[in-house]
Image (cartoon, rainbow, N blue to C red; front, side):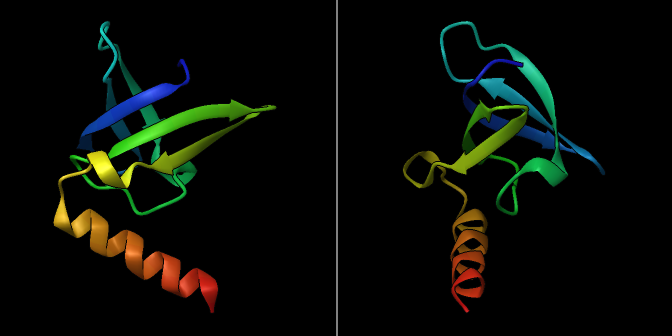
Amino acid sequence: MKPGVYKVEAIDKRTALLKGLEENGQQYTFPLTDFTHNVSVGDVVEIWQEGVEWKTKYIEEKTESVSSHTKDFVKRILDQE
């Protein structure tokens, strides 16, 4: 897998299918447990590697799913408590 910006195309029990938004549009699978937010189909995420760990960031401006925005908002509130 390469660091970059991806759109979540599909989710099964343990993995998400990601499609690159860059010109090559490569596809990868990524473990659901490694996401830092509750991921949904249609989310746009940035993925990069720090040391041996993969990090993810939900890109709010590019994600069109209302449920994803709601899930992210609730997670932020719970994390602050």
